[in-house]
Length: 245
Image (cartoon, rainbow, N blue to C red; front, side):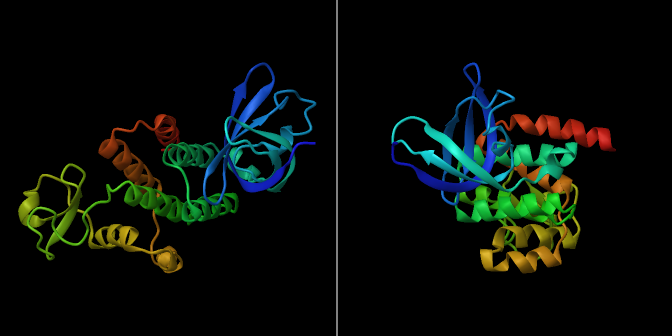
């Protein structure tokens, strides 16, 4: 038998491949693996149950330097099955999975996505906090974080009233000139905290603030606009949001 290795991670996506195979995108602590799972489109496949999207799994694979790794067998650590039973939750997680796949992962991204899945599984609204923190981490990694230490145009630190996507940061009352709707003081503090938080601050931020679906969509759109990246799954999420109003 060829040398094998064990990997643990979260299934981001499963793509049909050839007549009955599939390609799994698995988020591990430090990277995304592409794994060929033979025969998983067949109802009789023994590996079919361990390839569900958003499952936390442990696989035994034949890892290859060039080309796809090959799945032998594995087990599910946590299935997060309730997410797939809820259209809104699953739509949000598909957006996150698409974004993570595009920008790759690291231990912090892995931790935040794992916490987000667990909170959605437990019907906790705090899942939005972890989802927004995850997006903020990617936005910072890409070097497109908003300027939140003052007004991006005049650099004054008082009378800040809104966030401008076009200008790339906070605006004061003078520089805004009523162009963009003002945000509340609480919203401004929440945005600044989101991009100033280190990993050690995540627990405190989670206790202090409550992000929501609108916040999540705003930061996905920030990614799209700043680097011209089309998040295809966002359109479906917005349609689901419209249906729930």
